[in-house]
Amino acid sequence: MHFYKTIGFVFIVMSGIIYTLERGFSLISTSLIKAGFFSGTMSGAVPEVEASGFFNNLFVPLFLLIGVALVIHGIKKK
Picture: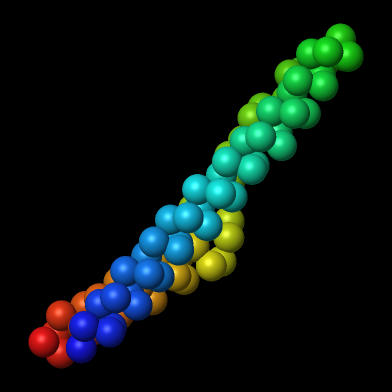
């Protein structure tokens, strides 16, 4: 029964890692666009730096849900 809790925590951690990496790369890529805008002295509206949301990637909430379900299952089995 310890197996379910361990795998559940692995799923939760992987969900967090995927979310953090995706958010970081999204901020970096949109910041590069903004830096190019300022260096090229373009006219018009300044582009907004947007980070990806929690539900933009299907795997983040899915892994979180699976992880929480496995941890709860492991606790109930004990």
